[in-house]
Amino acid sequence: MTIGIIGFSRFGQLLAKILKPYAEVYVCNRSDKSQEARELGVKFATLEEVCRADWVFVSVAIGATKAMIKAIASLVKKGALVMDVCSVKVRPAQWLVDYLPPEVEIMATHPMFGPDSAKDGAKGLQWVLCPLRISAARLKEAKDILNKLEVKIIETTPAKHDRATAVSLALVHFIGRGLEEFGFGDQEIKTMGFERLRKVNETVTNDSWQLFLDMQHYNPYTKEIRKKFILALKRVNKKIG
Image 1 (cartoon, helix red, strand yellow):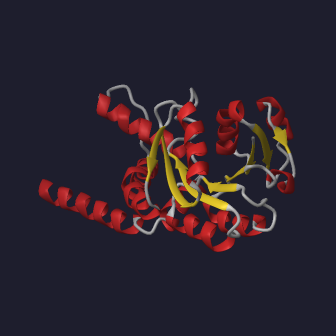
Image 2 (tube, rainbow, N blue to C red; image 1 turned 90 degrees about the horizontal axis):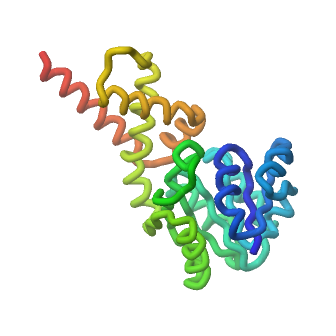
C-alpha cells in the first residue's frame, strides 16, 4: 500500500511519521524538504508521484486546500482515496465533492491533535472521519489502520464537526490568543488554574497565526460563538460592579 502526503510542514511530517509503519509513504512540498523526508525514512517526490498513491492526504493550509484539491483532480488515480486533514470540515468536504472526479473516493478527516500533543504518539487521541463518497470496504481499510494507531475514531458529519469545534478548538484558540495579547506570562506566585491557562496560551501560540485566522474564517459557526463568549465576559464584568 502507498500513501501520499501533499504538504510536509510540521503536521505533514507528523502524519508521515505515524503512518509509515503501515505503508510506503511519499511526500511533497512547495519548498525542498528532502532532507527532512530522509530523516523520517519516507520518500520526497513530485506532486504527480504523490498523487499516484492509494491514499492521498491533502495537508496544506486551510486557505490553500481548495486550490490544491482542484490542482490534483486530474492527477489522482482511479479508485484512490483522497482525504483532507483540515481543522474545519464543512468547506473542505464540499471542495472534495465539487472538484474530484466520481471515480475517486473521498473522505473529510480531522486528526484532533498536532505535533505537540502527539509528540509521543497518537494513542488515545481523537481522529474525526466524515465519509463522503467511500465504499464500506475502503472505510474499513481506513479504520483498520487508525485502530492500529490506537486513536479514538469519531464518525460524524462535517456540520456536526464544525459546530463542536467552534467551541472545543476555535474558542480555545481565541482565548489563548487573547491571553497572548494581554501579555500573559509566567510568574512566581501562581495557582494550578494559572498553570492550566498558561498551557493553553503556549499550546495555541505554537501554531501559526494563519492557522488561527483560517479556523476562525472557514468554520461557519465560530463568529457566533465568539460573540456569545464576549457577551458572557461583559455580563460577568457587569456583575462585579
